[in-house]
Length: 157
Image 1 (cartoon, helix red, strand yellow):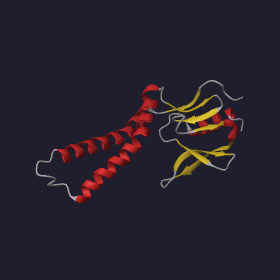
Image 2 (cartoon, rainbow, N blue to C red):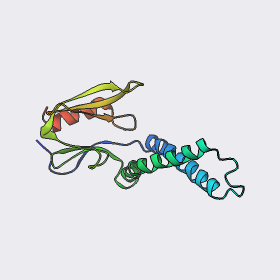
Image 3 (cartoon, rainbow, N blue to C red):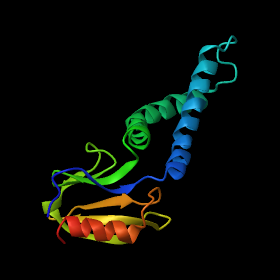
Image 4 (spheres, one colour):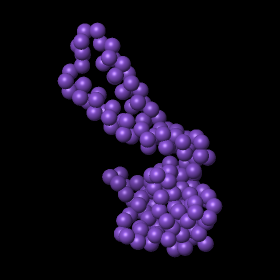
């Protein structure tokens, strides 16, 4: 049975997700202060060396590239009922359809694995074309094994 409507499988923990989103907000404030300080320095860049100017510029570029992900995260947590993993029209979606979307018919297996440098728990989705997709589960409210079992049931695995 492939769900044709939106079925939310897992939601974000508001407390954990909000805490995680404070980090990018903090960096945004640092870069805004840095640019303000850079622009209003009356002595002609007296305490900004060449390297700190490059760091401010490249850090700001990286932050701007990271900004769409931050906005999508805020949207999911505050305006989309904290939906993290859901099935809609036969597609498995994590966080945002533009970020992570696979057809349930393309899924070969769904398993619980450790990933990354610090061996965090995550749901690994193996696709027919051999690609692996990982869903990090640190910010979710539902126990991981229940998510895996529900996804297997929905995707007919």
